[in-house]
Length: 147
Image (cartoon, rainbow, N blue to C red; front, side):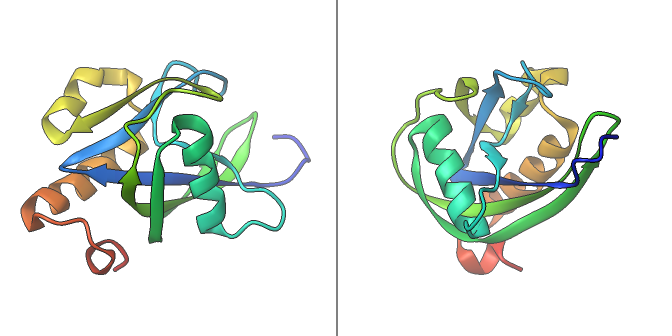
């Protein structure tokens, strides 16, 4: 592991009408894999600001941040980062892959299996939990997602 320190990453978990927005990464370390829109937190940004900026840059989708959905840590030989995922409420935009996203899609719970190994396991786990809760409750509210 390099001596450059731990990076802070942010991601946006956007669910709309029972479907979650995912992007296919266009660059390393996860090129070709499906993940949540996200990237590095910039100096001076809040977690919510960073997640919403990455969402706009990678997809053009506009959303409101509801709060932290999950915090995870990734440690590998080449990189070490802490990823803070924000639950977000969709406002507008269908989305267009841009920046370092090579593709995007809105996926229902039953469609995740079709992505196979291309869907990052940690993302699969989080998305399955959140989509199942959203479908069960019939809503995607700040109360539900910020517990």
